[in-house]
Length: 356
Image (tube, one colour):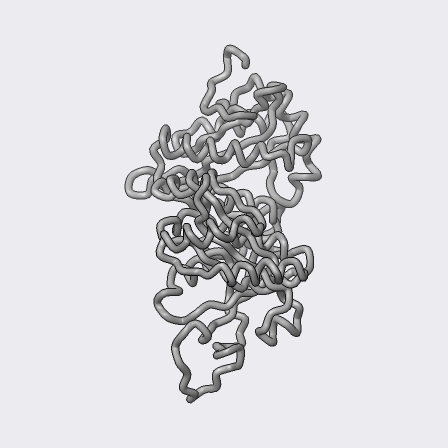
């Protein structure tokens, strides 16, 4: 580390430092070498004049910038900016970031963003961070979801980039959500194995959710036949949730279009609203993307499904437009049906673009 550097945070592989003119030559070199990577997403300074203008901008009270450096090589890896910081009743900022092409897809930005969130909430005493991301920037969408951000909406023609107004997906995280994101950092997700079944059933029963061993044996059998994928979520040694993905849905519109269906998502109540469900859904979406650009899910219409409904909508799932069904059959106007688990509304998400 250079003795003139101002250290803002340290992780396992990277450090966050305050930007300064001492990095100018290296920054400009890396930014120019990364133009192909950045072309569609951002416009970092490419020359001395623009770099000095950037330093002037982030030194204002309503701006903050940090540079990401490798602890191993001391190289400049990327940048995170907090823009338009508003104090008072708002205590919020807009997040921007980019990595240089030599260092992409190595986990550096995920580590850096988690450090930046801590710095923003603990040192800058902010309450909320907002990230607006173009919908086809899949890697960036997944990054903020992994760091605990929650999707809030979709903004048409939100930001002008290279002369064109671009749509953006809006994500945010608040200080009181930070605990949840830290818990999810201890989360592991792995496929169901036979040896998981007995402790899984026992721990779910202790958590107030009664599932039978025969159910998970069937899921495992379906998996062996290539009909279903099953993942378990664990925090340390505690089973906290699971999800299954069925390749051939019993819901006719999904079956006809070969849309994989999330068939069973369950998270113990004490671990809800902590990012577990979102991470399980993300795991299923990544698997579904190997066969389809769309994924689907159905959910019940009574109060017990309320938390799940909010989760699905926050992550970009939208009604498929076919109305509600009972036992997979459309419910016609004027019909009378029983309100139970088989009365469903069906949602889809275009996972190729991260939007509905």
